[in-house]
View (cartoon, rainbow, N blue to C red):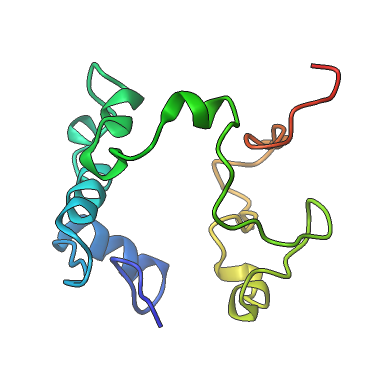
Length: 138
């Protein structure tokens, strides 16, 4: 099974590893992927790929994306190499059961339970999905 760059124990231990340990990437990944991941996951936010004056163009211009025609992609003129079968926007059939059966208690989106939480009274409304089919009305 593939592992994320930082794993083990509970969320607190993982967060400590993220802050203190050096990221270890599998050797079978190409140098371009190593460069991209290290750039996106740099510990100093101001030095992360895409945080500079070029913004998202820094990411788009990374050598790992050299084969991507961004104009055609944004215009939805590229046919995906894989299109999963889904039964609606909430379909989870393409996710491994180990993720869909995970208890919500250790989920990053679990609701805070402490009365002195910084999120008491906070409400959030999920925006429309970023990648959705364009409306036939334009």
